[in-house]
Amino acid sequence: MRGADILVDMLIGYGVDTIFGVPGDTNVPLYEALQHREGEIRHVMARDERSAGFMADAYGRFTNKPGVFECPSGAGAMYSLPPVAESNGSSVPVILLTIDIPLPGEGRGVLTELDCAKLFEPVTKLSVQVKTPEKLPEIIRRAFRVACSGKPGAVHLQIPEDMLLAEIDLTRISLHVEEECRTFPAYPTLPPRSKLEELLELLSRAERPLIVAGGGVNRARAGDEITRLAEKFNVPMCTTMTGQGAIDDDHRLAIGVIGDNGYHPHANWALEYSDFTLFVGSRIGSIVTIGWTFPRITLNRRLAQIDISPEIMANNYENLLSIQGDALLVLKELLELKASIEPAQHEAWVSELNRRRQVFWEHAEEALSDERVPLRPERAVRAFNQALQSSGKPALIYSDAGTPTPYMTRFLKINDRETRFAIPRAFGGLGSALPATVGAWRADPSKRPIGLFGDGSFGMTVGELETLVRLQVPAILILFNNGTFGWIKGLHRLKGHNQCFGVDFLAPRGQAIAEAYGLKAWTAKTASDLDAALAAAFAHDDGPCFIDVHVESIADRVPPVYSWLLKRGEDPLELRPVEKAYF
Picture 1 (tube, rainbow, N blue to C red):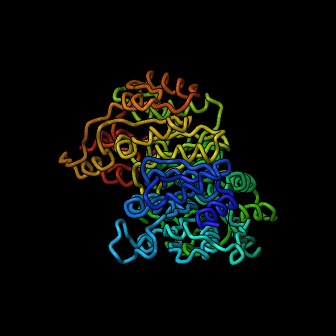
Picture 2: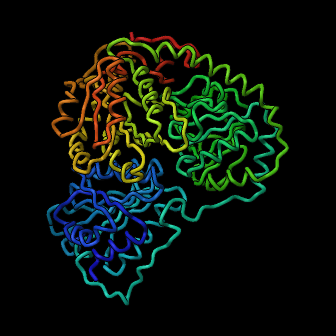
Picture 3: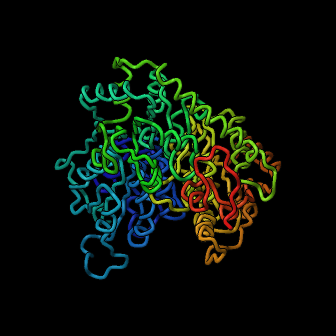
């Protein structure tokens, strides 16, 4: 049996139904093996290796099964580096297969030769080269085990082409798979019960407790459990950017998003004045703490942390308690334990936070209903919220960094347990959302994939419009079009001058480009244009569609970013924020 056939057989054994990739000189044997098993595993051809990686990333985020993608040697491997780094930094299970030059060619000047195993070492949990054909099954098992165990992440396998062409004696190997490692979390762990009892004791003594749900809660599919815990003890809950959706946004205990980018002032205020905060599935990094400058009253000795990874425990603050374990199992166990916590003791605190939340949203209504041109991002999010709710169907929403991020994070409303919202926040790179809709579609074809991106991102992955049309992916693509790298231009203007260099470009004719690829498309320059386009897009069920939204740039008005407002002399915790110009 050839190595390529063994590789494909094991992928199928691990439940892989989709592999994303780009053809090249070295991966022909893999494609031959995939073609023989077309009914069991689907290959999705992307137009760029980076795009294939973002497809796999979205697949991994929305299924908790490893997203698998492949690439040929040389440039293919180098193009694959950004999505692998993002997946690993965001704790998404992903496996990259680099099909490399034959092993005898090493060190002999063969075209595309590259030490891929070393290249990917800094940005993966595991990066190894297969050196003998017989080792292939063992290394495949190790790849799935590492990707799905502990804190999930990316694994890279460098597989020389001759390993796939080799005939392997099946009596000398085992093709078994580890059932536990087909999905994350493999081998989930629970802490000693005494740790959980200690946590409940700390909670019982708190007058102003707060729960913060990080991205790990969504990765563990523990939204229902953390919501029930908050309800059981009447504890208000905030989320990080990547934790958004862990609790319904309109729930009475859902206070909002904390941190720097797209934060809610009442949520940050809650973190400032909480006397005990429980972080679940968050590394408490720079965005959440605004570069460890917020809360101004330090978190030292007033927080507990639940996380699957012991490496991040008390890494940035002195915890009262650190609990290592799978978020879903820990939360389920906490719900079973008896505790002397009277929910009414927190009612005054919950009421105060809700009063502040109400003031914020009442004031925000003016911005959300603003009809000015160019279209305000707040009004664009209001239109999106209404269209999503009116559709009555769940969606998988993937947003790029840039223009959509602060406004979506602040104003997006998710109030059903099936809709998911993802933002790649490890490295904040552009160009992921458009191809990610393909991965989201393969993750769950019953849900509408939606991609949100600026025109800077669009220019990086526009070729994947062909992929969407070829596959007839029912994606809704929303372009925030303003002809600039707005985030970077805003950083220039934060310095109090208008000397903005190298940030502007020609605004794309988004509708024309989309239609040239065969998508149904609309242009929206006014609020009424956008309302109509979104209604039509959600009603469209014949392949992908595209909305070119002409929107105000982040560089035109200071966005809801805590650190930026602070630099402009504003109080970022103001519940009635005023529009702030750069100068």
